[in-house]
Length: 112
Length: 111
Image (tube, rainbow over all chains, first blue to last red; front, side, top):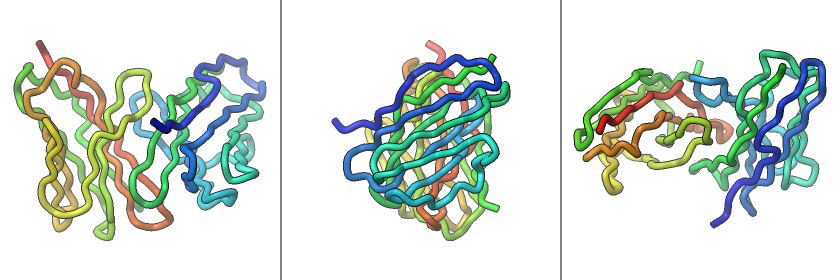
């Protein structure tokens, strides 16, 4: 069964350090999403890609976060520098169209 | 402003009972609606999708959609302890293929 892959699964870093997360969507899924989920809340969209183009990054804190999907397949989300408030689960999801999206296992980030 | 609201709970039901989870959304133009289950420390797992008014049944799960009232619900029949999780309602408002999530309802099924 096709799945969204993410790595690493867990990341512990100190504040002011740089971190990067990787996502490989389900093959053929043109739309890729990065979400941040703080404990006790629902996922919040950070950035949405359609192929290699950014569709929506209005909630991405652009002073410290960046995302790319250079070849329209896998994607990287970077935080530099990390802050204490960035501790959260970072979820990647992909979808074929407006119908249904599927999540990867997530990356649990802890900033000390 | 696109909003999805859920009763945050926590909701507790005895094993074998029916659990009812509710969700309202702000945009009448919304096209598709989803329920995800999320176990603690795990990512959301899609359990139901619904697109038309009425009921949709899948095993012990029934999704109900009322677009006029901007309301979608999930019923879990014969609740099992393994159903204990947070249930997230998600809505695709139909613009730009974006999904908006509620804050989730925590469900505990008591053996």
